[in-house]
Image 1 (spheres, rainbow, N blue to C red):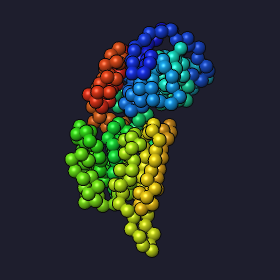
Image 2: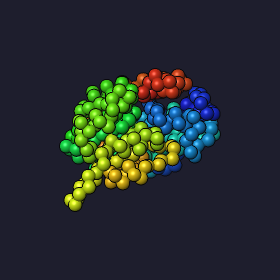
Image 3: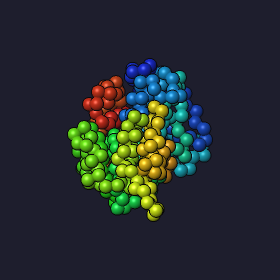
Length: 331
């Protein structure tokens, strides 16, 4: 069948192509036609730069796709023709390497990998299922509870969604970022405090406003920021009584080697938590939060473009002229 895709033919080059995709569905697979796709800003720009391990050009990027089911394998029972589903990329990408394969007009996926989208949920919200699931998985791993004080460093997409999830749980949320628009979005999402570390002494501001956080989340994706984020936990006092350790969550994707300062860890004795992607239950929970109105992706102010303008969309992300880009696919 004829299809279209956004491709990276080589590093730092974006091209929209049209090609023939042979489709022969296995019994447990479905074919979808894409309605909307999202760009995971940090991951896809890293792929574009040639810095993603395990990929080679030319490739089809992307792991955020919402499509309509148009054909099904013989044994599929959990879906029907016409269902709207979220998935993380096509299993078949023709002659192109598969860097998840979500930026395609059609996709072949296992039926069990499809997340059914409620009819009342706008697609512009549902497209956040994966990144919101990643944020939710980290906050779940950190066991954030109502009444706790959470500091989130970095307000990219995942950091922002993590802040919203913590607010929904009833935690007190303080966020740090150097971009004014991101701090404003966090305030709209219910963050109790926002701090720009380039304008104030962030460590002092946190000591005065929060004291000792229960959880510090680094969602920057920048390995070089981690030790500074550790410093937002004050040293643990010495004494004979047991004091519950704070939690330090490393949330997201960090392509560079991570080195944590042992002395910082020793003085603070935190529980260090690493997350890896998400589980289907995290995405389902995130979609339910969106449907209930407790998770509002619209605060991220995504720019929506037709997929034919993909080179412009990625250029806007690289130039920091957009925080989030979505592509429509014409149907």
